[in-house]
Each structure stands twice: as C-alpha cells, then as structure tokens.
Image 1 (tube, rainbow, N blue to C red):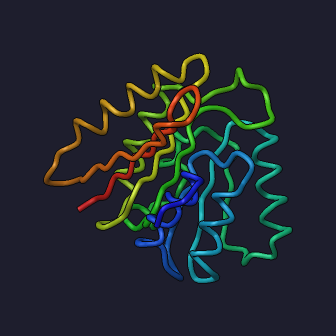
Image 2 (tube, rainbow, N blue to C red):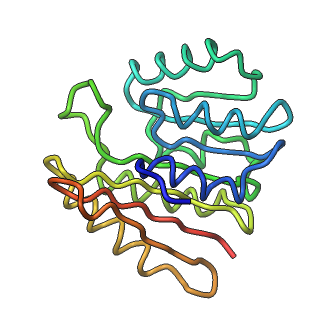
Length: 190
C-alpha cells in the first residue's frame, strides 16, 4: 500500500501483527491518535499501554479514548517511555505485539519538550524485551528540530547494531519532504 501519509503507511504495516486480543504500547502518546488505533485493533480482549511525560498529552489521549467509545482496554502512564519495563505488569512481558514511537515533540505544544536519545534508546531496549516473537516496533523519526538530528543518528545506529539472527530492521523514509525527511524504522523480533 502506498500512502501520502507515512503514519498511515506505518499503521498498514503494523496491521500484520495487530489482531483482536493483542497487546500494544504507544511509547509517545502525544495527541492520542496512535493510542486509539492500537486500542481499536486490540479490541475488548486486548490491552494498550501508553506513555508520555507531558500532562497535556496524557489528558488529550485519555479524552480522545473516552470520546471514541472504545473498550476500556487501555492504561496511560504520565511517565517517560524509558520506564515501560517497570510500569507494564510482568504478565505482559514477552507478549506485546506492537510498540509505536513518534520521536520529536508534541505538535501544537512546547517545541522545547522533545524526546531525547538517552531515554529513547532505553525505551527501545525495554520495548525489545516486551515484544513477543513476531512482534514489531515502529519508530517514526522527525529530525527537523534542535536535538532531532542527534536522536535520529543514535536510534538508527542502535537499530543497525541489533543482531540479525534475532531482529530484522527495515527503514523507510519520505525523502522528498521539504526540510528533513521523515524516517520510519520497523523492527521485527524473530
């Protein structure tokens, strides 16, 4: 599927691993759109966990989830994504089907509050521990802001170094976007 929106493309790829009863994680809930997507795919028998350090993002996401009349299959943490391994109950460890990251800043918010390499890399490492075999990480990298280029390089270097016999990493990017390209990394656990 070719889409004019890279996030729509990413969601179509994630549909390979999402099904009723699945477990999803939105590592950066932002405005809540990915959390709603994961909740819809998980259905009443699944569960979605979301993380954000900004109270506005948490409130917007919870409001969006409540307005969408989705099943009560979600838990949102007002916490950094680097804490997901500690905050997601151990019964879900090794059972997560998909983890979504949107790196950068919350659109329409304070652009000085950004994701950072150190905590993002810790969150990616935690995500890999949480993933089920066949599960997938989807990492959207927006580098066109101060600090974004450093995070872009750090995340791609980390993913490039993952063991080929355990993980497969595919990079897709919107290369003709004015300014910085939007990169999408898909990491599948074998």
